[in-house]
Every structure is written in structure tokens, then in C-alpha cells.
Image (cartoon, rainbow, N blue to C red):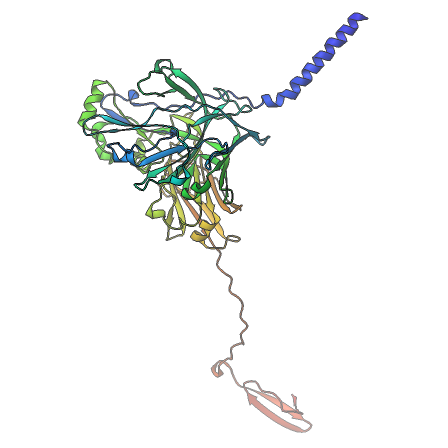
Length: 534
């Protein structure tokens, strides 16, 4: 009897343990061991006497820095950058919320860490005497009287329900940068928001930092620094970030580009909060083949100087060009290389990022119509680095993109493009009628052929959303048109036109009244009163 009781007790414990396991099981479905982010090759992979260009989606390095007023380089005296901190009630501009979900599941809040580590040196300029002048990074408080946002470090935020291959840390950064004037005022004119799955190890030498990672010095001349490893995002993750911008909200008007799929945007003008939501995009790295130095000029590319050639020969390597993808030169070089671009990508990265775009006279139309005029999202490797260009002839917004034809596994690379336009800006471009308009999104290849699997247009919460997907590369132009219907003319009542005499023929009828007979000849003969037609 005691043994039976003991076995029942064990069975109850097992059932209880199993029930606890089943209750906890859903949270375990979020776990995913993602791979280390792809890192593009460099000049060490190019043979002596050759040049090769790499187009890879590099992540910007968000840092806080103030102008050095005593610098010899004018550029260093007039620039600043502010990485916004998590909100703690002490500043007007800050990150107020970071949340995430997997698939269509529950939303979870991410938590910022106290990590405030950043690189010691932001940028260097070579002086005429051959020495480098370095601009140091620093942390500083907000100064509203000078229009200066607080400068913090790009911190890791914990996503405990969405771990990646290096843990559950994600670098979340919002950065305002711009210029500094002689009047002592700061002018933010650039905004960047980015999330990167990341693992950090501090106080480590570059020799101990793995080859798949990046080593940053955190203090000048100190060999110990920060070893950073980036990872791919977990599958089906959706991220939402709210940034309080205070009066700085009105400093970031214009166009933006992004690496975000199914992007959603909300601007709360009263609370001055910008909310961005969406999923990461997979972006491939493209590369040219190896090209001999003497063949570059024929492609319209700049020659490699003799000094660089000699230096590379001594190092027994060729020369590599590395393109920042959101610059005008990247797309132009991609087009010039043409068939020299390898048909397959070298690798792919998952990216979640949004940045302000350069404004040019070509797209100056309607720029003053909204806080954010529009956002372009694409998974293309290279693309126009300014707002979509307005084509007056056919009332379209045009945007050029480019990528390798296939992914690194030789699968056909399917393009994605979305354009989210502030409705006020859209009204400026296409007029006020959207209800019955004819919207088209076409992808036109270099040979003139159109290739697009799906396209859609929708409106929601004051935004017009255009999406095209399933098209192939390389270097097509995307054309967005929104043509209002022609008004239907209002019918006007008019009298029937009177036919001319020449168009009619006289006829004769016979009319009778008793024994009296009369003949009547006319265009429309009618018997007199009292007579009947015979």
C-alpha cells in the first residue's frame, strides 16, 4: 500500500512538472540561434595589380561628439552628433519606448542597459603637415538654450523573449546630427534610427577579438577596447520604437530612406513623438569582378594613383573600393560597372534602419508640406540617395535601385520597394482626389521591360502607401504614379436642332369634309380644322 502511494506521488510530481513545462513552452518558441552577420571581404582578397569594388550595407556608427573650436580643420569646428538616451525625465529628446513581437504574438517591452561605452575617436582629418587631427567623442547634457540634444552612447537594450545567436542584447540608437554656427547655436538636420542584434565584450585586445567581430578603441593609445559582434535578426521579429523629439521634431522634415518592411509611421505633433514600426529587410552585398588598373578609365571610373599602386604592391595586395550605399556615387559606380557586377551576391544581412535623405533641387517640389514628407523602403543593395525625383512629364516619382541578380545561394533575388507618403505631400504632387484615382507602381529595367509580381496602394492614418515586390534586378527604375480620374461632364438639356429646309422634302396630302376635297402641300402637311386626311 505504501509503495502504491509512493508511485502515485511520483506520478503527481511528474504530471505537475510536465504541466509546468507545457505552460513555459510557448516562451521557448521565441528562441532562435541566428548566425553572425555577414562581413564583406576587403582588399586582402584582391590580387596585386587589380581593383575590386564591394557594395555592402554597412551599419552607421552612432556616436556623440561636439565641435572642436580650436581645431585646424574647419569641418571639425562646425559639426556635432547626439545619440539620444533612454528617457528618464531629464531631457526633451530621448527614446521613450522600445517594444517587439514575434509573428503576430504578444508585444513585449525591451529594457535599456546602463552600458555607455563608445569609441574614443570619431573622425580624423589629415593636415597639410602630414599629421592626423582627431575629433574625440564625449557625453554631454541637453542644452535647450543652444538647441543641443543630449549626447549619450548607443546602448544595448535587452529583448529577453527574442534572443539571437549572441544573447538577447540589441543596440538601439537614435542620433541627431548637424552643424554648429558662429552664433553658438546648434542646427540638427540629420536623423538616424537603427537596431542591431549585438554582443559586446569590453576590455579586450584586438588580437583576442574574433575575426567575425569589430574591435574599437574606447580610450586613445589603450590596446584594450570593445569587441563587437553583430548577428542576424530572429525570423518574423517586428520592432516598434517611440522617440520623443521635443522641438527637434521640426528639424527632421523631408524624405527618409529605410531598411524596414511593412513600415508604419505615426507622428504625434502634440506630444512631439515619432513612432516607427516594422520588420527587418534582408539586403545582399554585391561585388564587381577583379578589374585591372589599366581598364578602370575605360569604364568611366577614376584611376588608381601611382602612390596607392606602389603601396599595395609592397603589401602584396590589390585595391578594394568599399561603397557606402546611401551615397550618389555608389549607385553611379554600380551602373558604370554594368556587366562587371557579379551575378550572385556575396552574402546577405538583416537590417532595421531609417535615415534622413539628402534634399536636392531635383526633388524640391512639395518638400515644405509635412514634417516627414515620405519614406522609401527597399531591400536593394544600392539606391538613389536622395528623395524620389519628380517627373513633370508624367506626374511620377522615380527611384532607381540596383542589386545582384541572385542571392549568395543562387536563388533569384526578389526585390521589395515601398513608398510611404504624407497625404499632404501626396496632395501637393497629385491633387486632392484619391478615392477613385488610378495608382500604378511600375519597375522598369534597363532594357525597358517591366517586371513586377505584385503592387498595391492603400491609405491609412494620413499616409498613402505604395508597395511593389517580386521584381528582379539589376538597376531598374521604380516609377510611382497616382493619376486622378477625369471628371464626368454634367449632362446639359438642349433643344433638338431644327432641320434645314434643304434636308426636308415637301409632300401633298388629300383632306375631305363631306363632298369638299382639298389638297395640302407642305414640309409637314396638316389637314385644316374639320377636314380629315383621306
